[in-house]
Amino acid sequence: MKKLLYGFCLLVIVSCKKQLPVIQPTIITEKTPNDTDDPAIWVNPNDASKSIVFGTDKETNGGIYAFNLDGKIIKEKSITNIKRPNNVDLEYGFKLNDSTTTDIIVFTERERQQIRVFSVPDIKPLDNGGFKVFADAKDPEHNLPMGIALYKSPKTKSVYAIVGRKSGPETGYLYQYKLNSDSLGVHANLVRKFGGFSGKKEIEAIAVDNENGIVYYSDEGHCIRKYYAEPSMGNEELSCFGSQYFTKDIEGIAIAKYQDKGFLIVSNQQAHTFNVFDLKTNAFIKELNLGTIETDGCDVTTVALSNKFPNGLFVSMNDEKNFFFHDLELLKLN
Image 1 (cartoon, helix red, strand yellow):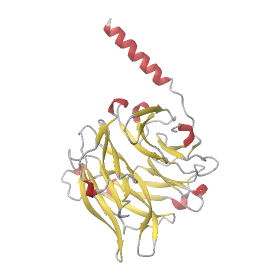
Image 2: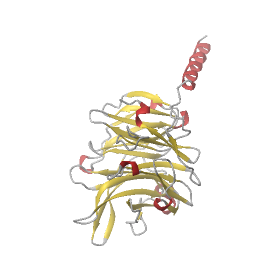
Image 3: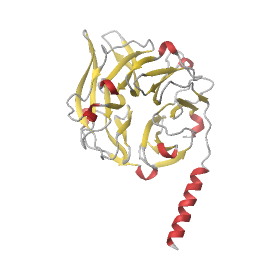
Image 4: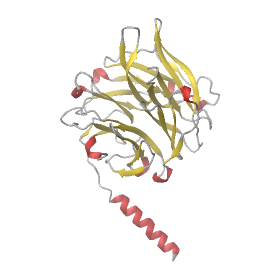
């Protein structure tokens, strides 16, 4: 009888999952050649309707593809011939010298064991070919970069790249590099190693709440981990949460910030859905079906961009070589 009741409960749960309504995308992008993975949204400060979504195409002959808000590839803004780019992030107002700043995108190039830095929107390399990461790793899989997130310190205005990898130790899995510029160019200097790892799968998705100085990352088969992003605040883990709400892999992370509240949106990869958490309390709020399959990466902005996205934009990778764009109001976060 207990087995029958248990089986019935499972059937009910599965049925409920299937009945979760699909929130149709506003735009589906053009396809990339190989395998989409992670997006980053650049909001154009002069004309938000001309903002760009950058998305990785993860293969040996991969690239960072630029999309306009209609989902069309902007060829002149795309970066190709990259050796397996994995994740991408961006930051505004990176200081090049005393009088010049630029927005930047930074992405991992796994097969060359490095990260790349380009200016936005002119898409010029600033890294002299790339910065090696995990240079002291002894295991071959411990120097293959995957995830990346940028953090700009509210205190010092310093910009950091926090980088994850294919595999690594139980502690010190993430490396944090300070990006700075002088008369000789841009440099990436290792400032700390931090972050726990369960050993169950890998760590790829990373996101940073800049204002509060907090980094979140997906220990894929275990939990969402939470640490301080500011190196001076130490390496103590603040939280490990959310595992009970995921079918298998915990994947892409996006942070939606409003004036009075914030949300963490995390891909429930094998369920083909997204789980939403309260940014302050880590409390689970709801699950969303946005129509994507096996989502790896996602990104969000609450800035109004165009008549198609007057409430902001949520971008998610879809396992059909494309990305889905949703007007943020469709997610009904507020």
